[in-house]
Amino acid sequence: MEKEVQVKLEKGKIQLAEPTDEALKTLRGLSPVCEVGAGRGHWVKEMRNAGVDCVGFDIARKNRYVRKGDHLRAAESHARTMLMVWPPDGTETQDWIRAWPGEYVAIVGNLDRIDLGDMLNDWTKVDTIRMKAGPKGLNTLHVWRRPDADSSETS
Ligand SMILES: C[S@@+](CC[C@H](N)C(=O)[O-])C[C@H]1O[C@@H](n2cnc3c(N)ncnc32)[C@H](O)[C@@H]1O
Image (tube, rainbow, N blue to C red; front, side, top):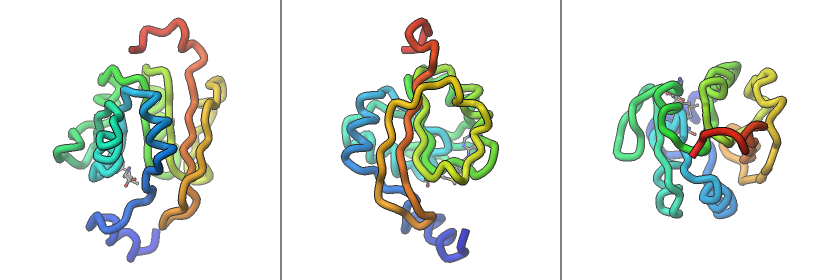
C-alpha cells in the first residue's frame, strides 16, 4: 500500500470502504453481525447507527466499538454473520472462516487480494453489492451462506 494511504488510514482520515445504505440494509437483515478485524470500528459505528445489532473484534485495538480479540474470540460471539472489511491480504481469512460457526460470512473489499482457498466452495453466494471504490480500489460486499445452515444450531 502507498505510504500516504497507510498514514491516512492510521490517523483515521480515510476508510478503505464506506458503508452504503444498501450494504447496511443487507447487514441489518443478517444480524447479529460480528466484524472481525474491525480496525478503528468505523463500520461497527455506522452499523449501529443504522440499527444493525453488531460487535467488533480486532487483535490490535480496543475502543468503544471494538473489543480486543482475535478471530477465535470472535467465533464465540454467537453472532449469525461474520463480517470482514478489507481483511489482511493473503490466506489469513481462511483461518477466520474455518473458526466461524455462524450461518453467514460477509466480505467487503476486493476478492482478488484475498486467497480464500476452497473455504467457501460449498457455501452459497447470496449477495453481491457493488460499492464506491476506495483508496485500494474496487469495493464489493460479498455474502455467502453455510450449506448446512438449516440444520445448524446458530442463532
Ligand atoms: C487491513 S486492516 C482492516 C481494518 C478495517 N477493517 C478497515 O477496513 O479499516 C486488517 C485488520 O485486521 C486485524 N487483524 C489481523 N489479524 C487478526 C485476527 N486474527 N483477529 C482479529 N483481527 C485481526 C488487524 O489488526 C487490522 O486492524
